Length: 158
Image 1: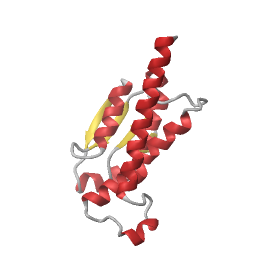
Image 2 (image 1 turned 180 degrees about the horizontal axis):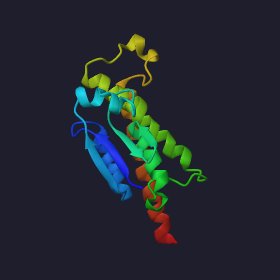
Image 3 (image 1 turned 90 degrees about the vertical axis):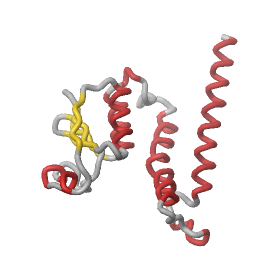
Image 4 (image 1 turned 90 degrees about the horizontal axis):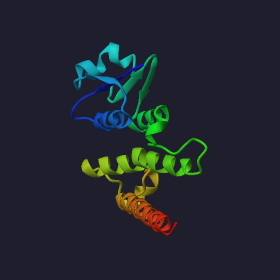
């Protein structure tokens, strides 16, 4: 059963398309335009937000990039794009998948729109401060690089 990707070329739908490609999925693309076609009853019946991306897989509709990526990774386990469900690494996978979709996207968008919360209001945001988000992302990348280097060292000694 193939997938249908609902997207727009200048949207976050590029991430969902990339994941479909990484999975080797059979899919077709329906390009929607901001405004009329995204807000049309035919599409809002699939995604009431009237936003892209969304994928349809049979009768199932999945929206939100993180959910689409997680769903596709689980549908194509041979591609090893996510740790197995029973793996202890699954928690770390969820942590960073949803960090990117939540605090990171919110902070980057707020900064791009010049809407960052002032220091006295940071506790009211889901990301704290932009600097907190960047420091956390740098930590994740650095930790992953160290883990990879250690794994390579252990393999060469094995």
